[in-house]
Length: 328
Image (spheres, rainbow, N blue to C red):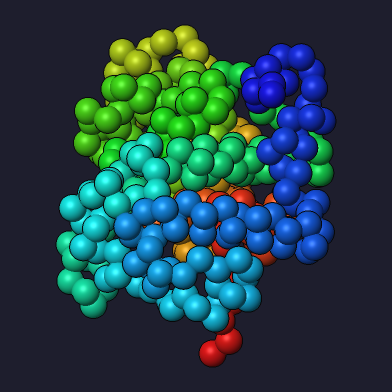
């Protein structure tokens, strides 16, 4: 099957859209057919390992209805004895990698959680990650403005956090130019990473910005504050940087305000993760000139749902998690 960049090089943008964003056209029946197949595949895998047999209480359901009747609800506490010690021998398959969460995990008192990420979950999540960038940069169905070498500002925690793993996954999915480069970014603190990314962006530009929405605001406001006292470092003396800065100064003067990130860069797309995207949407648009496309993902679940180009609600993705909606 052709990769995204191969489809792009061959001018097959319609096929690229269908490959990555075609899930938006699934009917309810088609979506549920995929969901049921996914659940039964997972039951088959789990029934052959120690952790799975514990979770399935010795049963092997053959339908969604039987699964709901026989398998109890679980929390991370049920998995903790196995996962906190990274016991790969109890899992159905060897994980591609282990991801960790941030901070304290609820009432159980874990400082953080370790989560095994399978090859299938990772690669499907990366496929939808690229879909999110396509959707964030289009204005209508079927439009693909993604280009090989588009520049993506690195705004994520390093590995083994899931967001750091996602940057490497995206790099394998599509040849973005990361600012700063991934191998260098991981050795830098967050502050250093942001500074280095902006240094490169002054010269090379930015096409995409993806990460936590509250961080977009903090970075944008910090930039606006710093722009009031710009010092001409060697980076800014590059002809491309000077030209970009000159245009931005004219824009901000014309608008009778301080310089903002949107004066320097015209972004193709902004993708915001986290439950605060809707809260910060207007502020991000003001600072960066682009409304953030919301997505929901989690370390434990991978990619869950994403908005479309119309920014109305979110659409679940069908083939990573089996969804259950429980009435209160």
